[in-house]
Image 1 (cartoon, rainbow, N blue to C red):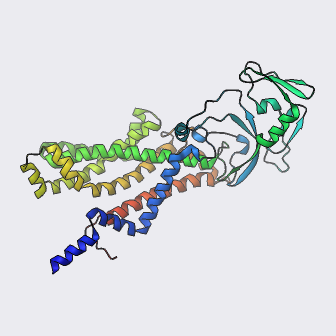
Image 2: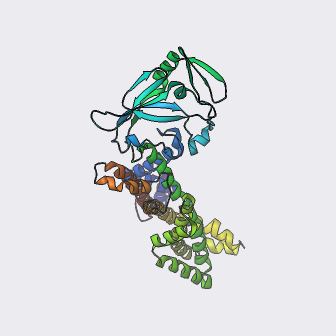
Image 3: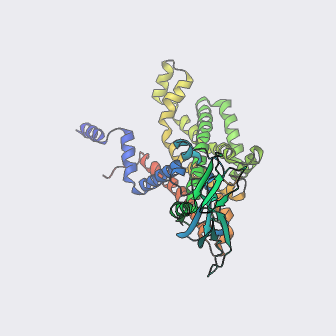
Length: 413
């Protein structure tokens, strides 16, 4: 009867994977953290398709509207650049953005006179009392030939040569109406602007891509090195184990941040260098865990049976042992993902990580740290909150995986 009861309970519970997944889903805090990471990942993947500023690195600068509060609205005049812009395809725009065909000029007020539009420069004073800057209305609407930008007014028309060297003769009233309808817009900055007048929301979204990609690639590098060395040391033992353990202890004895800084200086500053620098310092934890797990499982009956069947050591390690120790590896991977994001943010804050104009949460904090005490604290607080929530979410996921894979826990539902 006892045997049948246990069998029935196991059949109802399903496989060990199903039981583990069920336990994880019952942990609402970890599931919420997992949903948050999925949401951030989707936003960063879609990237420039949803950012208000879809130019490369979201780097459209307007110093006149620097450090504005969240929800700031401003009128802008769109001025066509005198150049031919290549249209990017869907995936190129999603990954790298699209160069804008316009110059964005914020203004307080405007008026038309003859063949020009005059916009009042923003000063931030009340009343504004800014200088009025003239722009030819043909140059606003059309991309002119860079070698011949002469615009000639003839009675009620304007003559000029466009970017394709075609002669145009356009009525002035038609150009004025076109500007009013399409080239004067009101732009809203939901999270305000940074010290260079760039859109904060766009910079945060693209900065998430940097942080998550650094975490992902560096963790993959660490997993590759850590699992390989840990499995070899735990399975073969002897002098091989002693050499690898010595290497682990040497790397372990060096402060992580100092080692990352040294590797960064050796490889140079930049985006791709961060991947390697962080990945080469995170494999130690994984190697220690894998080594201990392999040493405890290599004497099990199924491993002895595999040896008796004449399987090669490589097959035994990768086909029979490693699949049975992935639980602890997943847990430590979640923790390492959080550590990688913090390390990247710290390096960027010190100025030796991701380099401008590429946005990074750590760089954004460094650029705006002084604004905390001069009236615009959100410029540094917003990327700080983003780092905190992302790191906390990965830690909660790791805790949830640890509890779900703990065989000592019993299901209460």
